[in-house]
Image (tube, rainbow, N blue to C red; front, side, top):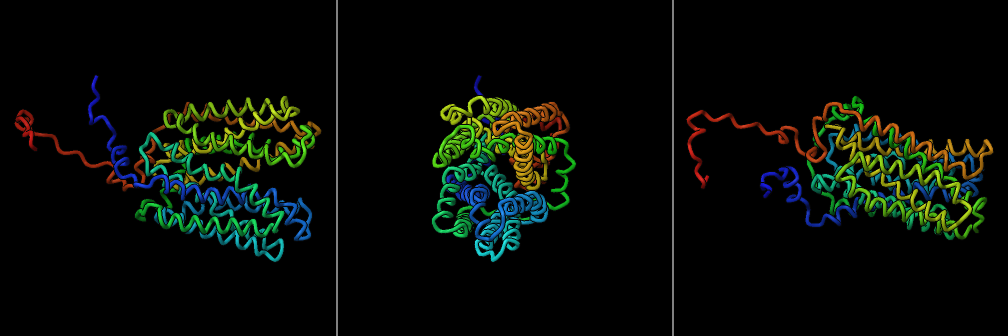
Length: 437
């Protein structure tokens, strides 16, 4: 049967036609911000011994700087999304990266630990809001059936940072000093400001308002999706946080080999964000459920292969690939958030950082109870299974559909639903139409 040309969705057709000629450059510009954010988020953990010694504090106290950054992410994401609802997305991207650059510059220049903690909190504030807005911009530039791929390509900046940015920042920290590493991140943020100023699409302000954004908090589907992220992602962080010590104490590898395993994790995360969203564009929720089951199996296998470096490398690669769950859930939020797109997208990264706190906390409890370094695997698997149980609740939720859709959320609501023409009179119905008209 020949398909009618009118069967194509008007919104999809218009989006294809309106896509900018340099879409890859736009996505690269957005991903550069993710690269800067990923570098400072993960590298700060590896730089902790260096700034602790330089500032004359013990390492547990120095860890408060990392907690301050995470707190900034959790609080800043929803707050900035609501307050910035009336501003154009391009303007928000530029402002958020400028604040991020300032926070990391102040970190590099901090005269004492107290000022460093304040600077890390400031650096964390734009984190979630930037990723949320960048994901919405990327999704608005492609047809609806490619939204997950576009979001995944923006998230590539974060995963590539675990392969390139984090080792580079750590190397600079060892050779030049930890302050230079945060200075590098500040320069990367300024580069993102320049790229977004040149290539990010210009849009109009006033698409939403704070009260409309807060409407996302009334949606049961939004909360269940965020719960999947906050719980299900915790398993990956439970293993990753203690991976270096597990490699030394259990796998018995030298410290020089640890960056290789960390890079394996980053490669898995990068390839996961490249290929898994292709399946999510066909079936978002089934893909999310499949990732959670896949992650649970990989985490459960972790203690069994920890003694063999080659099998462990394969398992770490698989655990890294489960990071693609972030891009998939970001697309799911676009589907269920209605008009509150910015707040829902930003809250996903608040949930992500909640998992970043929950996983290591529970894994640390298991280790303190004497269950061993590899106990983080079963703990992580339990979190992934719990996330899957929440996924079942979300998948079976057949509540009312959201008012607006992410694919046309950039346009005013009145334009998204044009008025229908009045019905023809009986005499007009029987009259043949002029083919020219």
